[in-house]
Image 1: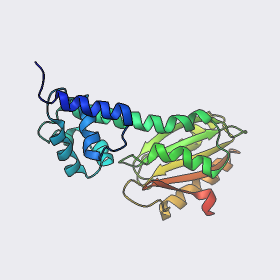
Image 2: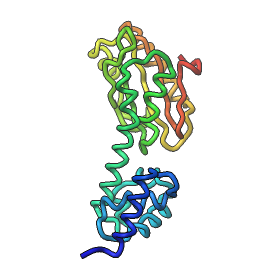
Image 3: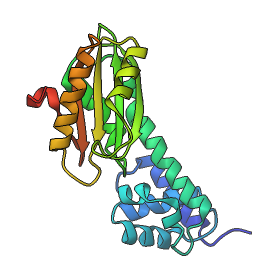
Image 4: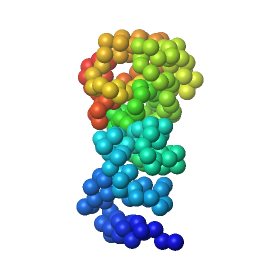
Amino acid sequence: MSSVHDGHRQRMKQQFAEHGGEGMNDIQFLEMLLYYAIPRSNTNELAHALLKRYGTIRGVLDAEPSDMQQLDGIGENAARFLKTVREALRRYMTSPLQEKGFICSYGDAGRYFLPILQYETEEKVYLMCLNGRGGIISCSQVASGTLSVVNVSIRKLVDEAVRRRCVSAVLAHNHPAGFAIPSVEDRTFTQELKRALQLMDIRLMDHIIVADGDYVSFAQSGYL
């Protein structure tokens, strides 16, 4: 049996096929996105409810599935689908930079970590290990939390850098609910790490802090 919404859905899909998202507002785009998770219900009302609750499409995609499911009509399948879309977006934004494979300046480091960290809702700490030509040997998350309380030690970071046989390293973390301004704890931790790496003949090339769609480079700002 055909749904009363089929004709509307087909027109929306056709509009997107011909013009992309141009001309669609956030309600319409989210409504259409939900088609692929909710095959028969009126997703326009759900799109309104989601944007009313979370404010923006970014807010919707950042929301926890368990919280989304508090809304009538949003089941586990739709909530997980929206979370999958967010992960697809993150991978799309980061993959071109990762394929480049070289970090030659603070600008390269900042542009590398910005898409990785700007949408995170909790603080994450990454360590990137580089060879003598600036090629990326590895880049991995080493902790979650804040640098002042997170379970990550100078020894752990140095051990990882030594294990990777790197020549230089870049530390990065985000401030999910603040500004990309280094705190006293950030600066103290960075200097301690710099000295510890120097003992192993490894240079701390930079420390990147990401917040609010922007980043600060310790190297550019004179903190290193």
